[in-house]
Image (cartoon, rainbow, N blue to C red; front, side, top):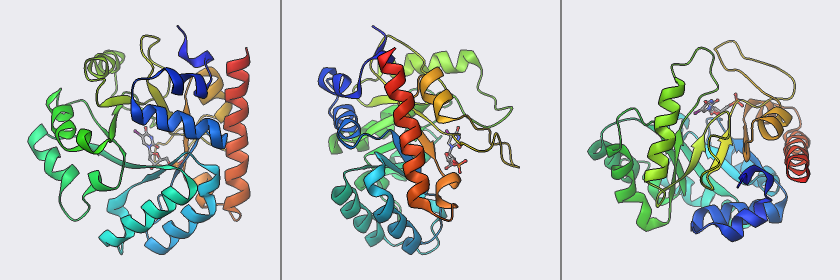
Length: 260
Ligand code: 5IU
């Protein structure tokens, strides 16, 4: 079965995973496969953008450790907006330590990520213990994990062998791992969610190694389910119309892909 030809609604109906079901359902309902990467550094800016752009996105991706004036109550305000606009929160934490350490990083500290981000991600470099550690905190809360299988940055060290072994880890941990951060769809074997960063309509790169594809390439050619867009939207003079533009581009690419 080639899942990339199925609609989000069909995939929502078929998956046994509650988080995947919720994500695909809200994508189908809101007609958006856009994840906003909200890499701005004050609570005020984040909440204002999340409220304005919430109607056009399926996922809001945070980097909580770049916020200058973080307080835990910020996360509760963000959760209220997630309910108001029906999007999921993804903390792009990229955990990379041993299981015992990531447990504390995910569940504790000042951020308590597991309490407000239903999605987070990790590197697989440390081996399966990192997934076990994160699962022990996140699964009972209904959270899910994305594995980093490929990156968008130029000359990164992800080999195809590393990517394949990451897919194997995902297949062995399907109760908690529901997808990948990747540049391509990686398997037809299971109904994973593929989220792709490095998406931009007007440039191919930045000055620090980021590389970009268009939504058409990411979704239509490479099989992404969700496009992750940051600076192109939040640095635009008109973030709302820019988000609508990316939402439409991502949705058109998906509609073409599923109608072929
Ligand atoms: N991000 C990437 N590439 C990756 C991974 C994560 O760009 O391979 I994994 C993050 C970094 C940033 C966002 O938070 O996605 C992309 O932001 P821009 O659209 O502003 O480049």
